[in-house]
Image (cartoon, rainbow, N blue to C red; front, side, top):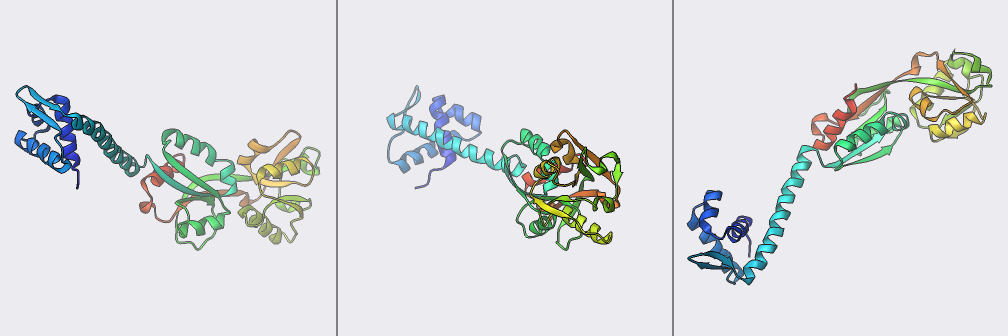
Length: 294
């Protein structure tokens, strides 16, 4: 047996109004058609639902019970429509993000907060990866959107500008370099470094620059976060190279930040997707939110 939502809705309205004529006028349906639907509903359920008199229509005990249940069913059906419209409009859904350590520590948190303030029913699943893995992950559909430090890659993806960033050198105030305003990387290589874990784009940049300078990157300590890097520098373990956006977040008293006098110190952060026109509505809204300030 199949229950027709329209028949249930008409039944509830007839019970509420007490007459078929008033419902017919409001719904623009012939009274005879409504009466037929009500009779078919009673036949389908095998019980009398309404008592018809010259004073109007009143529900039987079964009709009262059906009215309560029908309202719940109709509300559920309307909620389905509303919820699906929210998905189609991008106001509800899941957005998967791959983000590198630099952006997840600086630009991304306030953008996530402002987005969720506006779209609280969208879920963001954020995973940190190194920049090269981000390009590969987006190409393999492991996530919808990636934010990475732009670098040569072979992934079949679309790349868009996001932000610019500058690399700085962090030293203790009693370090020999602390009296300088800027330093070349070759000069910095004369000292012990605290470095990020293997696989990060910054680590690759530093190793490449060291090779070009004909020197080695001296390091006894490798860390997984900029927070740990700053604390190691504070303790005198070594000096550190990090994005300018990190400096104001993690630096502690007794340290100085020097400009890194190298062309590669200016870095471009980018947003990537497999295909912009293939993003889900929620992912497209988040993509536009990321790039709104570009």
